[in-house]
Image (cartoon, rainbow, N blue to C red; front, side, top):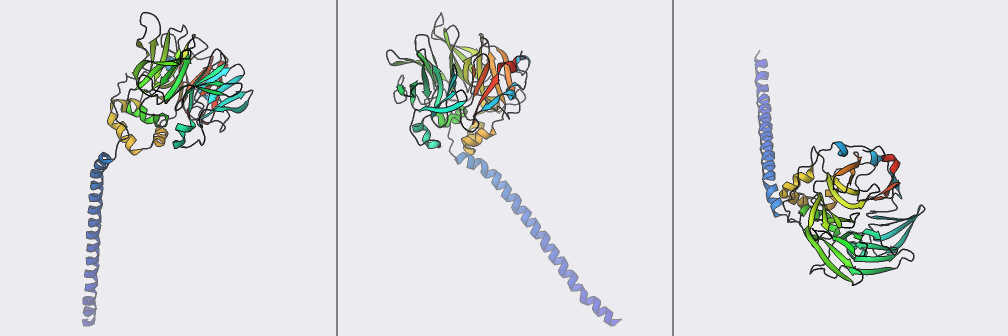
Length: 411
């Protein structure tokens, strides 16, 4: 009995030691929890301070947009863009603007080339700038051909975002500078020549998207909302330019109306198309043509049915639109551009292909959609031959072809 008592007393310290260890573990766990909570709290407190210290690449301005339109009637979603056929996949990068001249098709690419397509064969017609090309820092010297048209003498007139306005002989590839970007227009150098059209008298009408941002920083131009964009004219006879209108946020697509009495000019930032009157009682005035597109427009071209095709680089969905949310809240755009690069911002844009056709009054009469964005995620321009729609893109590695018979059932 005595021995058993001794054994029982001998076990007691081990129980006490176990309790002490467990107590230490509890204190240690509580300590780690407090440290974790404190660290998390300090991190959240530090984030606003860090964001304040990071320089903002833009000075975002308030952008007033109308309540975005409902996608009903002519805006009702369909899948017609998914019927498009991709051409020259991975052989052509960013065919922004397109010109069809008989059996020939011309376009400019992201690596500074002007390409000729004839009976399915692709070849380099000319290069406006100098190599090397392909890198971000190369663009200003490599060049970036954007808007292009064929003049009445068969020359290809091209607006290069960096280098200026050119005339190209499509037979030889020889090029002539009409107006270099180094020459100011009304005291300001054109920093982002974009699109153009040619009047019946040979006058060339050109958009300059921004005198602050160049093409490499087009996302900043859009996100900032600044309004240095403008429309100017070039007279080839006198070799002179004239600023027609300024104050257009991200001035972009240009086309003459069918009666040649006005220029239709898109504003990417404002999701709008303006009408600049060349003739009539409102000559010299800028008016709304459509101030509430279902997305942000790129180029505008005449359609075979008598209207105007507008390619959209991004959409404003009725249920939610980051474009509209950030337009009314400049601080969102400021934070986004602080945290993300322009490339990352592009990846955040939802893929949804959409083009709209406007009638002579600016009303939407039909639309072509790719809700998935897997075939056509965005469109820069529509070139309508009557039987075929060629779809351009500022960043995709192909151009697209859509037969008109495939969209005959569009209302």
